[in-house]
Length: 257
Image (tube, rainbow, N blue to C red; front, top):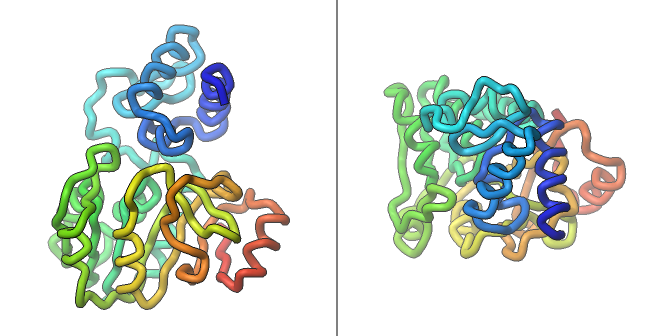
């Protein structure tokens, strides 16, 4: 895909979803956030998008470049696409009082964290710094943050220390997102070194992948989890019949919202 095609795709995504985040676009296209920001600047100059801190929206949006960066956390539900919001709400609804949850890093799992922050008497273990920040506001839940090395691109903890911090953990549910999913390769990412997801999955009784339908048949260059390590996939109602049929053959539970 050349730069012209990529920018057209970005405009299509914004027109469909209402807004996009730089981090998500970087993961989707497998290029740096610097390049994505340059694309967004060019598109704004042409009047095709309106930039805000961390992303872009449809032209005329009230979100402008320079707005407070807290918009990424506090207004995430307004900025995220409706499918991601529905997926996050469905995931959070699976969490019952007394449960221990593992939350991997990512934009959809951050939305789940925001929903879980309204619950009480649960334990949430995460390697995501934005999710930890969100959950830390609620004193009625127990928050455990993995130590380790910060990956600045995703604002998450990785490496040997982070993985060791999960040893001996037993959780009820794990929620994990990804850049792509297909029946053969499982869930994949364009980011490097996601071995922590495998450690998280091994510590959970049930592993739930949360991905909107645009992620189907998209393949990143790194595997997050093979399909046989995933118990359930939550996605939106735009999933194709072909993708539903392919997933059904794997035996993985499918929840459509």
